Image 1 (cartoon, protein in one colour):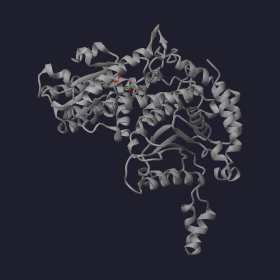
Image 2 (cartoon, protein in one colour; image 1 turned 90 degrees about the horizontal axis):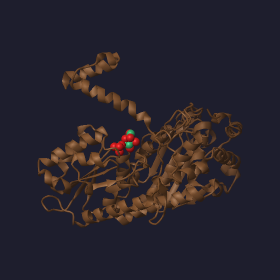
Image 3 (spheres, rainbow, N blue to C red; image 1 turned 30 degrees about the vertical axis):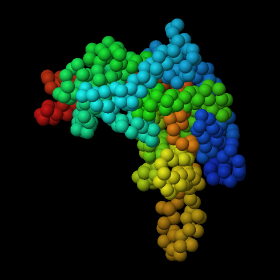
Length: 546
Ligand code: F6P
């Protein structure tokens, strides 16, 4: 078993430094250093990162960069990009970055150039999406496709849905995107009355093509379709994205209607593959390629920029500082952009399925806390819901603010108000409002002294609450690609430092197995001896009504 992270001299130096850092107030750090913003901000691939509103100074950062270097982050990063088998519990390379490499690049895996394979599939996606978008692809009664339904869950759903929403202004005007993920029949049931089988294209998206939720929804969609058209018409309305050709064929989808990808693409990293088919249909192949290029620009930055200027590394390290040293248990993601409404949910899978781990690569328990809870909602909506807790609650929750400076709408006044709110919130978290300031305000308002004294504790803001702000000029395919890749690599750096495998997800297995058993008991013979009284009681109550 390797050395525990907490025993390393880097960790201990940070621990000692913390004694000092705990006494700092960010408002004093800003007052003392007029160029703090310039010092603690960086830019790459169309994204600007302001991390100056973290409780850090130059020494904190140099200790954090040393931690990353001694944890071999750079060598581990290079191993990932080179296609080494870094997912050692599943014996797989981790090569989502190959999905965004330009045509003509070369990366050999088991003697095959995977970049050539990627572009061969991209060419098929280009051809298919062009035909659907232009109207050349027709449904069974010769009408154009109007509705695209992606059936998939987890990474086969969150990425397509989030990106289609985020790039709504780029969408084809005729094509409406829908997403069905939940095995709960209410999901598909709510959609079916809105669509016409003759003008709907279903994309069955599943890496394994055996995920129970997806296969259940796919079978139901197929049965619904076959009420309106004969089986021979299925190829015009059902395509698949998967790594499992046999299972796709067995479902009744012809190989020419299947878009493949590879086991070296993790589900939560798969939006760049054919799993992004619904996005490519919506925004067109050129925009889809711009999306890939934006991510590739972030990849190149991650690979080449020194850690001190490296956006993913900086976000990862300030995140570790907040999580492991200041003890924050969650991060709130606050996109000040309505089209990024699904981004916090997307990051939940990316971060929590990747780094929600409790043992190191070598099987030993991790000595420190790993992935924090990731949650959030759009600004300004969150301000009127849970920001109260972020400002004055007992927990300190770092916030990632994300905003595009220029809107893609033409409504007056909105954008200035939106950005003002975004910047005001991070300022308020950082500065707070102390008792003297609160007193001065209330005195100016002419409140009586006893009322002022009573209200001061309630109206005081402790401040010193960390945040990052990520800005882009506009939310475009390219900046969205860079933004997602930024978080992917942040997750990578944190996983590398914690010494965990960010690329498996064994934690989702147990529930799947138990659900299979319980499913048979709900309709067949109960196996009471297998369960506790609670589970037996719940099964019995359901059996009584099913
Ligand atoms: O939740 C577990 C998981 O394996 C995710 O990692 C994955 O994105 C999701 O299920 C869907 O898997 P598939 O694409 O194989 O249907």
